[in-house]
Amino acid sequence: MQIAVDVKNISKSFRGGKFIVYKGVSLEVPKGDVTFILGPSGVGKSVLLKHILGLLKPDHGEVLIYKQPIPYDNPKLLNEIRKKFGMLFQNAALFDDFTVFENVAFPLVEHRRELTKQTIAEKVFEKLKAVGLDPEKNIDKYPNELSGGMKKRVGLARAIVLEPDILLYDEPTTGLDPVTRAMVDDLIVDTNKKFGLTSIVISHDIPSALYSANHIAFLYGGEIVFWGIPKEFKKCSHPVVQSFLQAEERHRKETVN
Amino acid sequence: MTWVESIGNVFLNFISVCGQVSLFFSQIIYWMFRPPFRLKLFLEQFLFVANKSTFIVALTALFSGMVLSVQTYFGFKVINADALVGPTVALGLLRELGPVFTAIVVTGRAGAAMAAHLGTMRVTEQIDAMDVMAVNSIHYLVVPRVTASFIALPLLTSIFVLVGNLGSYFTGIYLLGIDPVVFFSHLQQFVNLRDVAQCLIKASVFGIIFSTIGTFKGYFTEGGAEAVGRSTNEAVVVTLVLILVSDYFLTLMIRAILYGTL
Image (cartoon, rainbow over all chains, first blue to last red; front, side, top):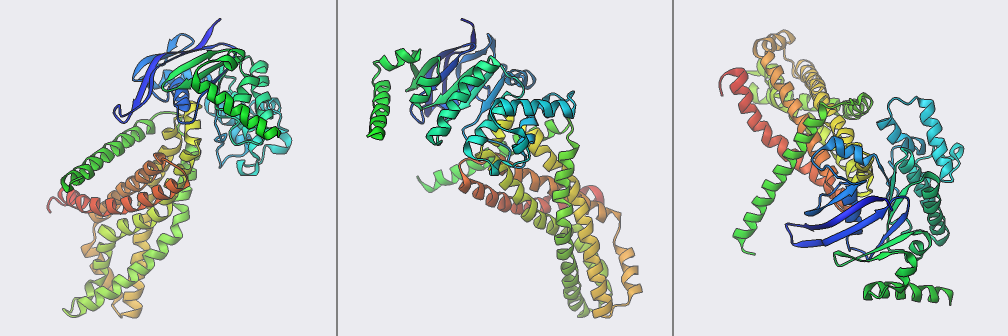
């Protein structure tokens, strides 16, 4: 099993050590899989994502991307490493002033300056189709004219347009209606298969994780308290994991009743 | 917390913010000379700062020039020096009022808009998205705004001074009855190139100040929509105070360098 992202015993605190986020987190993300990082709100899931992207530097420990340590002090190399990543933000983080086309084309315009306008247009159309959006109808729209689900699709198209190796999702299903949520779950799995990616999903959505994940990591109290496949996750005896699962089960039953 | 601790905290915060602004500014300078040079973004910002501020700057200048002319005239008439209204207003506009008033007007328009725009981009994670896509957000968002302001403000100030002097001229000649020949001869006698240089230097510095503070406050906004409003408000207040404080020290420096005396 090849490891795409290797988080090695990182610790991190803010405000001069007053606020400790991690005491020593280790995580191996296998190449080609969908790995969910679950945990309650405020436990530092997004902070972990920022460490993987090199936006934050750990106090101790290191993060390896394909066995290479992140070069924090070398902006040029850091940018090269970041080009291996695509990211879908919670609210898609589309540029308000840009149309759908300009949003998706942005990474190409910035990083692939040798491409002609026509090639860029072809790539944008291809990626929009891959995420299930009709390019003809949508390229001239602005983000405020799109629904939540459509924004996610455009954000995903933008994230994969440079054909990254690793795709990161920050709470992709939070705040969505059940139908759109299911659509995003499928999109994660399909995109991962179609483009041969490694996907890391930050979430607290257990049904999504059980449906889409190959591996699940559970972050709590500054540590990874569980790492394994979804079947094992259901049997995990850690009290916080159990309370998470029970709360989800109760919510499901109440909804059915 | 005792009052000594409170004063200490305020002082430490002040030093910390000064350090942050200095670091931010050094990054702007670093990225300013790094390719790719985004001419389109620069021109967009230049259009926004310069072109769209021209009318309001000219309008403010016209009335400032006119009222200065009237006030100076009635003051100087007492000592029979009303012939000096032209150069007095011209020097006032060139050395002080032109750069300061223009900077104040543009801060209210463009500085506030910069803080609000970048603040919104920050709280909606658009700036993070840009960084994640390996596009340096300071290079892309901040550098064009600061360079455009650095160039636009001296041009706007020139318009301010020109229109202000026209206002002064028409009021002086047609309303107050000053002889046009006397008006111009005194202008030539008292106003020189050093005053123009002083005007343009101040305007350039104010251009850097308002755009740096506007973008700094927006770029480091933390929180939601409310925080964007707070950043915008702080950007305007801090810029106005800084412009007036730096104006005093700039005046001393420029006089020492260009005029050779205080």
